[in-house]
Length: 142
Image (cartoon, rainbow, N blue to C red; front, side, top):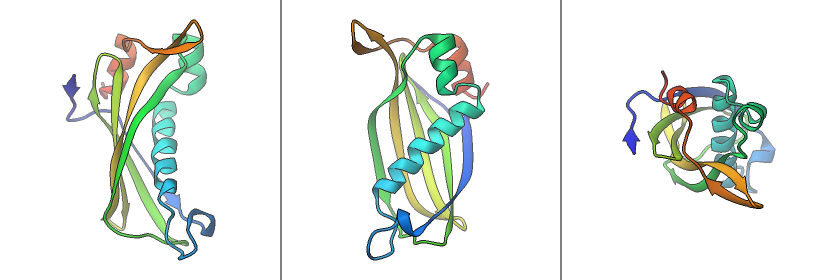
């Protein structure tokens, strides 16, 4: 595994709606996992690694989620605009770790990570496969 100081990065704004919140008007915790997932896929697509490309060019199912974690530092509510920042922090033989931070006006609200595996389908089952060098270079931010 290699830890990365400057892996692929991506950030975008999230306009929180009432539908993102629980009955108390606070962002419902699974919505952060959805934001992590959406940001990872937007980051990959912006780098030329969208789902269609992964399937057609590389013949893989994609980068399958195998682990995720979030730590909550403060609440957010509807009608707020949050920043979701994602960065590839580690690459293994077949795994990618993406770190995430959700902030409001520079204040950290949630941080966490996802571990994803470069997955192929073999005899109807998902199997990890080595990251291709070209994909590794993109994920390293080169």
